[in-house]
Image (cartoon, rainbow, N blue to C red; front, top):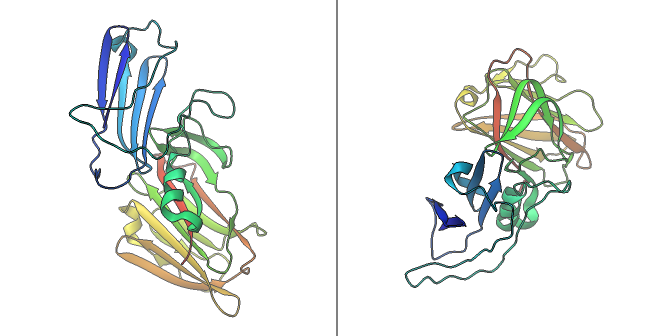
Amino acid sequence: PAVKIRITDQEITAPSRFADFNKNQEHFISLSVLPLEDYISIQWFLDGYQSTAFKLPISTLANRGITGEGETIIGGTELFSGVITELGIYFQDRQKRAAINPDIYRQAMQKKHRHNLIYAQGFDGTFLSEELSSQGDIKTAGGFLVLSGAASLQLPPLAMEERGLYIELVFEPALTPESRIALRWEKSDDPFITIAGNGLISLPNVPNVPEEMLSTLKTERSLTISLSPQEEETIKVVITAGAQSRELILPSAGVAADLKLKLACLATADKSLLIDRITVLHNN
């Protein structure tokens, strides 16, 4: 697929360059075209994942008429044939601001996981989602959430239930040494697990337990945390990064408890933490 943008007598083409596109299967394709002050931002998404991004200087096209009415044509050349099952247009957020649809990743994950999906955030929107609690220097940029300095982000409460939770965090390129991930129960002020960017796993509420080390956290983009309720008011926590994992059995607050996850950077951080996406599922 490709998009052509024509203003007056000038035209540009932005190809999607999808690497995993299969013409024989259904795909969820999204295209964002956002005119900004100095350039036009064009982004292609395949099944919720951003694949291509372009920044076209305004001077590339005639500036006149860029905010006027236009038309959209879906079609192709060379005996193009295709089936469209859904079509939607997003152009403003709740504050009536021109913005990229912030729910592209969530919508794709909803199609993929259906009732198993609890939460999904791809940070593709122009502005930070209102459902996230944040402090410090934090912003969205190029499909990432960027935390700088002493910044922090907290997800909405996650219901544990009997099936437990499966959390996937994807970074770019990996956790920074000065970053921290903390898990706590909603009714507690103190975390029961903290994970440092250098791979150190601490259990603040369990005395006389040595700290665990997960060295692959320094280089792996993806970190998963599986939480499964066990008998006798305990919970099994499995933390995995690449080929390494650590399994812990910890006291539980019960299946009715809500979990809170917080990501933070220390004030001494000299590198920003880039979060690509966060997905939370029921633990099958």
